[in-house]
Length: 195
Image (tube, one colour):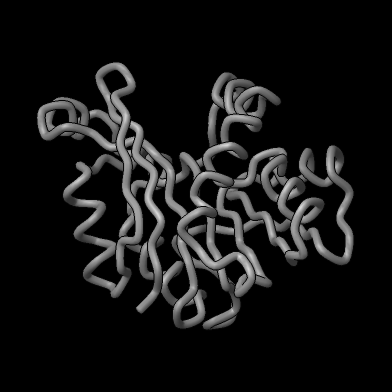
């Protein structure tokens, strides 16, 4: 789903990017970064995290976003290189080959995807065996989900238990999970491994 201009301004702030980079680096404590070469970032926005990873680690990073305007901005702010690539992609229908990536990142993307379970399957498909998936997003209580689901057809709504179950059903093993209250919602970050 394409974000509104207000949402784009909010998520593409440098302060927000710095917070996302900090969270990703914390998640790196739970993975063997030495076994990671090819990285896919879903919903990269202006590409701050993708650029940071390509500049600070020996990684080939591919940042994607559903919105062509976001990708155009990412290319403008962070010119592509041998290690950094950007493209428009739908997380529910990824065009990458099976087993293409060692690590997939998804930060605050799933709540923008109405049919987010399709994305879970696509992520699993493009990851190599033993590959890693860093997922950072909102989760909702059953009460909040029940209230908002009838009026939010363009958003993904899920509880923590539902998202964890979806990951486990396709074959992800949870290496780390932490949740923090964020007003009426909860922010959760997880590190998963394809088994």
